[in-house]
View 1 (cartoon, helix red, strand yellow):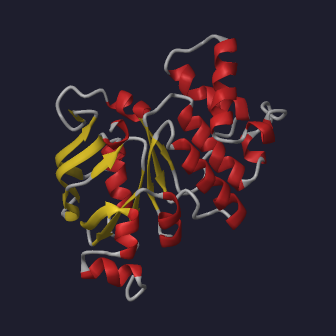
View 2 (spheres, rainbow, N blue to C red):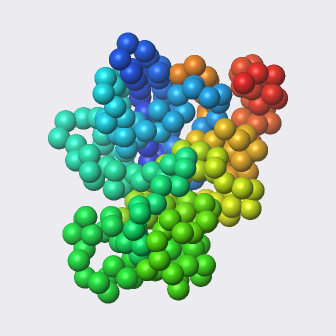
Length: 254
């Protein structure tokens, strides 16, 4: 089935920050048009792992990566890889909303402009489409020239998702996207994730196990830099194979 195609796979992925090894022999496969959740205690390597998927760790001094991250059958850590194109195809939404101190319109148009689109009508269309796909258009369509800093935190996070969508990615990485949001805003983001997977692949890091159970198709449990268990979400939560996974899921540690 097309939906079961792997879009991102890692092979023996290891990562060090200086002398400290943070990821150890990670083998994971993320399916196209599915939501994959990474769970585990703080500091276990979840965020570091998804930052490998679009080479965001490259900007950290002293970071060393060994192994493979294969995206659409290409090792993104191979030679002659266009890192800018990788980050266009694999977008990222961070823990706290980080809109630019510009208008709502400028926030969305920023990426397409960088990639060479100059026509105002074309940019207008991209802005509208991206905001609609982020289920934000109806709320802010009359405020496009207002500062993005003036909308609510939940709206800012959906704006950041729209900004990510504007450059037409294939994969959206989300690093605890709801951790700074209230329950109502969180619910909207979760509903949005369910919509997004129809067109995109979503990989989410979350400290909230209930959220992982609600939104994901596949889940991976990480502990001390290792991927302890990975499988369909229902199996991970209802019938974990590893004792450590079961202890974490049932709240006996972490």
